Amino acid sequence: MDLQQLRYVVEVTETGSFTRAASRCFVTQSALSHQIAALERELGQRLFVRSSRSVRLSEAGAAFVEHARAALRAAELAKEAAAAAEGVVMGALRIGVIPTVTAIDVPSVLAAFRAAHPHARVELQVGNSDALAAALRQGDLDVALLGLREGLEPAGVAWRALARTPLVAVFPRHHPLAERGVVDLEDLAELSFADFPAATSGRAQSDAAFASAGVTRDVAFEADSATLILGLVAVGLAVTLLAPGTVARSGADVATADVRHGPVRVEYLAWDGAAPRSVARAFLPFAAAVGSENAEAGPEMDSGPASE
Image (cartoon, rainbow, N blue to C red; front, side, top):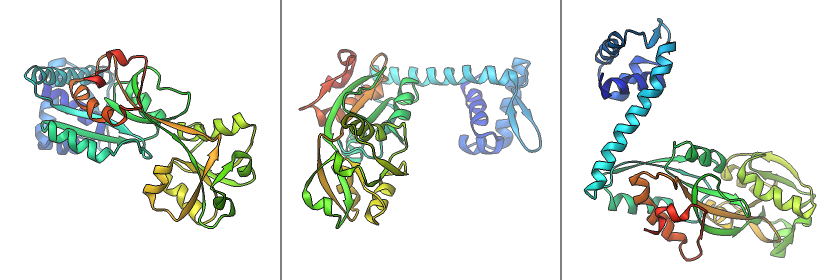
């Protein structure tokens, strides 16, 4: 049994196909099939149930593949640790980012990190804060840039607050409320809103502010894209509340106004404070420096390397 055979098993499991797995591993299908068959003979167990139309894990295969993943992960960590001992940062930095991040210029920070550590690879995943935080806690991400409502901090991870930003009300270009410059939540109560889906962290920022003010609102449009939300506003179908940087970056034909006692979003840099990988430890100073002047530290900050 060797690591290459384990990789083949994992790839077939993830793709559900010997052909696709072979393509991802840059080998012929016959070579991959031969190695898996040899592994099955060594184990005395069938790992996959094959048919003319599908490939699926056998009961033995399902038990085996989880350990195979762990072994591959351990081998990668061993390689990274050996390189780190010589001062070389390598391995894949798995970073999750909310699509509305404004606290840092993500492309520029990643470019600076890669320039300093050319042997490292960056894998970027975009998603909502809830999914990214869960992936971080599960070990599927190394670092995440999150946006949460004021008063709610990332749980189960180390964190640093990068920016605190009051949201602005966003109106169609010539809406009469936009001309005021400043509005109250009560002024928005009778309007149709476009917002992020219910129960997401992006939506919670506005929901909490309206609930605190005792004001109800009509969220007629739900979307997980700020671009789509702003598009609905621009054509006069709705209004919304967003971070001003998100609005400015979009170039949408809309108008904004400040909101008295409105929602506030806090952007966080979060990571595994208990056992961060060397590639994550190397990345943290690049992102943490952006918010260092006004940063707040999470409960695991003493163990987090953002101060290195």
